[in-house]
Image: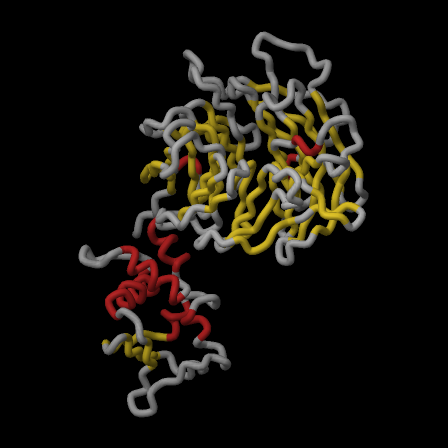
Length: 443
């Protein structure tokens, strides 16, 4: 149905609403209202009244229509938020609801909005933010998944296979890597439906047309629908595997041939601009740290660094995490004292320029080791340390703020940013915190 006039009338569950095509256009082309401007739209107005009938909840429709008019969301006290979110999903307005509830992500303005206690015993090992504001938490052989309303979906159970890493392909699908099951030929990775936990397909490693058992570790994803995983097999399948995330088929494999195990990599990061993959093996998994860049077009390592032979200092500046920053052509690393180090990718000497300006908090280290993690988001650098996360900004990466909660879960063992939220997982009690940016003030 094409909209031929500005005024539009809806009959929603028996209640009449009148608005304009201009207001509906605020919903965007990917919404139900945006589709009404397409000639292929099948909803036809009533011949007598001219109303478009929608068999949905009218009270929620009123709130969502007001959101399109004003950009604000005001939820009546007698309306369950879950009901409103369900209706927003139906109309394709969930992003508008999220934007009205919190602002665009800014590490210096983040506010703690809540903490969630996990449902399973034992410590969490990893947390991954989803693209829609939800997250998943991995520990042992379980992954607990939460939607953006922080409602928990049925957990994903790998039947005693330890989960090594997890990542979101999209808001409906999660890839999980795990240890192999000896003698079964089962792949060490699977794609699961995030809301039901159902397995969609497994990712196999083939060698000479034979499917091999393998353990999958760190994961990374590219914008052209490729999945990268560090793989460790029982024969010669050591290295980095590449799969098509749409079909699940293996499309490439980069074999280890450089003197250290790519299959033991703790961190993978795809660099879109240079078409390279960062592969890092870090302390304490190995006594020595290795970082490399692999060019899959030429099938070779184009840059590498190791701390073998590096002089030890009082601080024992072993690298605990690493992240590539393409804009500055450098790699940032961090040690257990939250000293940041920078390596120039244009240099071949492999030297690290260490900075201690982040070490503003003196005192006793946590009794339980929680090694720092790094993240880069929106031009800001984040580094976790004990029970806080530091935010660095600007060309010189100046410390601009620290995030600390009053959570009782102990030190932060992992954190992740996505869907305009930051999630921080604590090392005890499976507690994770949710940080959001407050919405801008309405003028």
